[in-house]
Image (tube, rainbow, N blue to C red):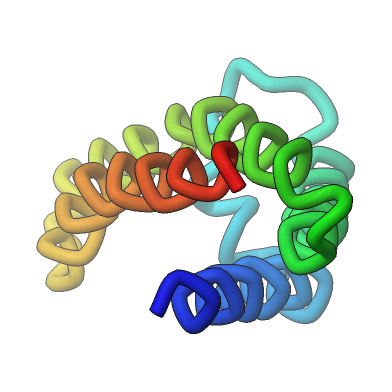
Length: 118
């Protein structure tokens, strides 16, 4: 069962990373305004998601891949907060998704943490 979730998590991050390149505007919209070079950060975070997910799949690099994903998830958490704030201010009908993403981030961190021990 752990391997199933490992591959599911890796596929999720690879798909999310690819989306950063295919639809960067989605991520630019949630980028905190205080960060410089927002488009470049979108691309870098997308590349990191892909690379770290691949590292997670490979048994020899699984430990480091899991830790790198945890660090990435912590680093991008401000974007999720920005998304919730912006959706609230704009009265966006998808505000519930923005609020759901916040605890989901902690679930993803816990999921990656499970694989730091393998």
